[in-house]
Length: 412
Image 1 (cartoon, rainbow, N blue to C red):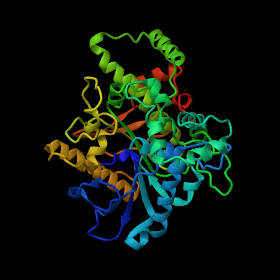
Image 2: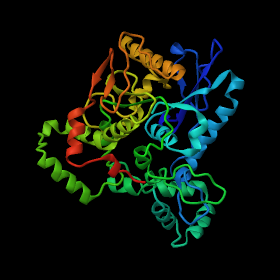
Image 3: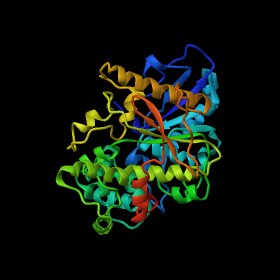
Image 4: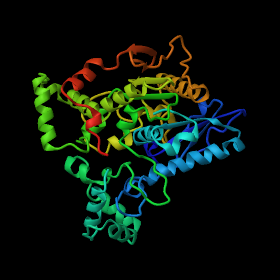
């Protein structure tokens, strides 16, 4: 099974009925029970990690191959989907986790600018280190590129992955997770996908503004805390500095509260603060931006197979990517409770209406209001849907007051 965070999905409005709800290029599919007049076309996983984001300034290797895979797929859809009954002017791209980051990158890329989509929501040193690990020490980027090209792909991947050990923050920072989208250098004959730091592009309004849904889950940090994962650019010095700030804020906790606070802090540092800041910057958009908070604790857990393989802290609630289980059918999935099925139906109906019109309709008296520069309303997704104001206001203010900003804590 491919995890959905390794891909983006495209939803194309069609004029035909009935529709195909099973058109898929990998082994997940939308639930047939709630298919509407939307064709769901999940893109097969793009090139990942070292093979997708190898970057070596001074060589002829074009960076960000993984993102350019996605651009090629989007261009194909734009050019051909009408032949399948789809509308090339109503394409919605959807991603979770790394896939959600991919969606954000497409908002910032000139290569994606003419694709008319709607959106759901490092550096060469890693390449040099990998080459040295695989047997070549050189300061010549082209020599390193040629050497790595001569090696079997599986040896390169295993070389990158061999440096990664779950639960070891140092190994995480040195692992293949270092291979992420990067600001591009000049390569003759190649388009550039990313020309500046994403937050610079967001601040300057250099964004492909489109209708947008973005959100987080209640216990984002549970998975990361259980894996003992830290932000990839964390260091002993930054950790001590952050600890002093937290202590000055008098954030003292008891042993019995430790798991709860740990997942909250890790969730904020790895996901919540960054998503919140991106959402705020997107309010510069003339197009609507909708924010949600998924809090339902039900039976369609997406991360369950992975969580069984890692130490978990004892905290209830949906963790990172668990909302995917309410959008896509999972192999071996149980029938689900009436509440599970209700939540799934609500989400699929909202996502489908957004793909069709650019406005997520709840199907209830609740109206999902977009955020703005002056207000932050968001949809709370539980067994019932309700609108709330000022997402995690006190926590977001806390991180701002002690000087933590995701813009200053991202590797690129």
